[in-house]
Image (cartoon, rainbow, N blue to C red):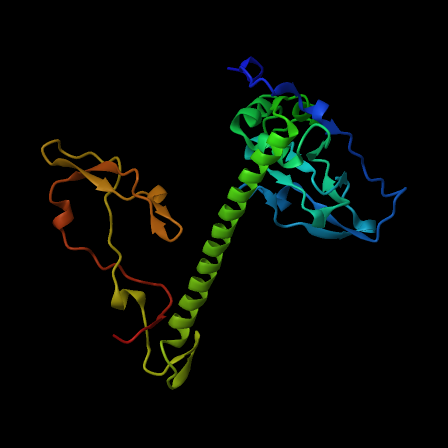
Length: 295
């Protein structure tokens, strides 16, 4: 079902996005010289957090050729390059009057008709995004035009209702971002602790110099093969006599994620019966020696 075919509440209306927006403008380096400015290119917008995360400060004389679109607080920017990636952001006041790449469509809400944050969340919906992506052209560099974004049909409730909907969604987004920041900080702390523990030990004690830096004096330097072994696996696709074949679950690369195992989908592989009972071989280890913690 298309958006325009949906039966609307009595006080809602359908329109083309352009009708709820104001015109935007381009920056001309020749007419409006700037000492420096904050530049938002496509890579500066996170398609996970849907906000600007890595802007650059650029000197006016070195401005990239794509740095031409003036953005204002409350604008919504929608990346027209690879639109399926959903690089969409709401412009915070700190980026008011700064410059964005021409690879963005700048959507500026007409305050008499639309709430800017409502349009922001509208452009993040799967339905609207899917209709925009249908206009994608180019195989190696898929892109759309500003017109493809601004000509999308949208549904608009009254302004008061738009503000209420946007406020609820904004609160949810803030909560999600707060939790994400906590996770990022916890990961950074874990990384720091791991480095500290594996290089300095659990407590202050006499230390000694090694080719790998200072370590506790009672630590040893060993080959990895002296304290562990590498378990060989089963070759995929080899011919096995049907009387010996069994199916066993196996761990794929896709199951191994950053710091954890994803066991939601486990596949099976054919193996020879009793092959798992063979003793693991201890292959020759040619890797560097590593510090070994005392038992």
